[in-house]
Image (cartoon, rainbow, N blue to C red; front, side, top):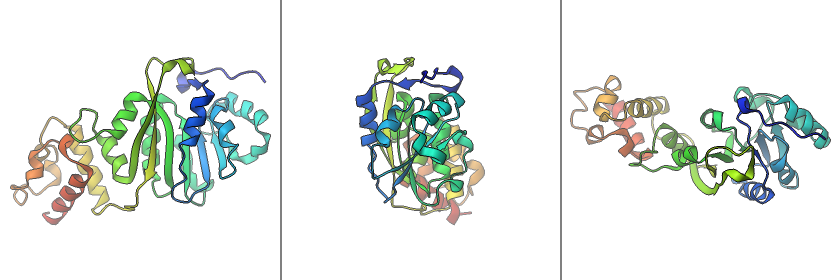
Length: 259
């Protein structure tokens, strides 16, 4: 079979190191009792080879690249309908999965944040994610309050998932090599279920706070609060980057109570 060309417009950098591929697949913990996993952007199947060796998993592959799809059809004829030629960001998970599942991949760096927000939108069904991201994005996902990397993505992911930075990956193990370092992270859905607050308002507060992160929350979220009733609220005198997920939940509840 002829090899697949990496396409710049798709953000493709094919992993070539089998040891790292095995380590990524081995990082799936299958917490939450699922046994179906979706690999995003399999390329030529270096992760897929290890996924398909696992008898505890039913593996699905999705790739928007028709050349990759045709290559993988020949390589894995046994997959049949579990090999999907489509855009992950547009995928209707409910048409493929009727239960909880995991996601894995060497994710295209140009859509990594969109992938994570797609996961968040489907958080009731996606119980684990193991993936390769640009190191900078991985650090944002795992950042703690008070750091410059801590932001909207950090808060939303950590509200619903236990997020772990697993290991750093150098550029030389990809073809073509990216101009940045990469890192593998793992997300495991926490047991919180829904947050103990108005979730829609929680999302509004977090976004407003970080969209004007140099301002105190009193100014950044002024359109969402009753200023008179919350004049003495100490959390509003801080910037968004100082608040933990729990702080944002508590603040959301106080805004709800004082409207």
